[in-house]
Image 1 (cartoon, rainbow, N blue to C red):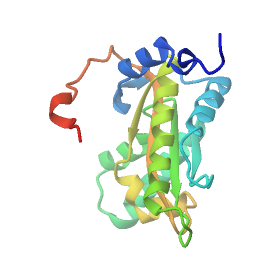
Image 2: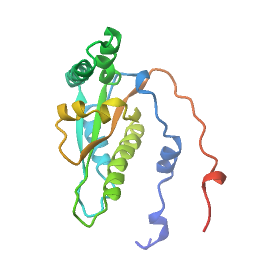
Image 3: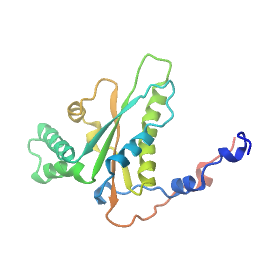
Length: 198
């Protein structure tokens, strides 16, 4: 077959099926096991294969596995009590357990470079693509994943404890595990209402 044949440029049917079947699972309803080291490396490698105008790598990744999830929970509890000394014990315990909801949590940090020709918007979109690729890769390996932010992504104290620098912000935390119960399909957009032709 000619190497320029259009057939070679067609997506594999299973890849399209994968995209059409992907859905998020609640971080609150995940359980072990999480990805092995080899599976996690595949997920992260896939996550990094995103559009990146200028080859800037305008993002980085923070991995929370094992005891790191508990330590992050302690940090979150500390951030709450720093500003809310009267916070209830229930609230503090909830924060301690936030990163324990899934076997693995991945923080995606957007790091925009300013004063260059590449627009900030494109750099931000690239970080979002990292999160989306991670969801798809996790799904391909049989896991469920959830891309969320919640208050820790926007809190200055949390950002400081995570070592974020100027120009960096949390694009999301991706929780990866197995669903506690089968996932139910949710309503998807009606294409006739969101697609127009120019």
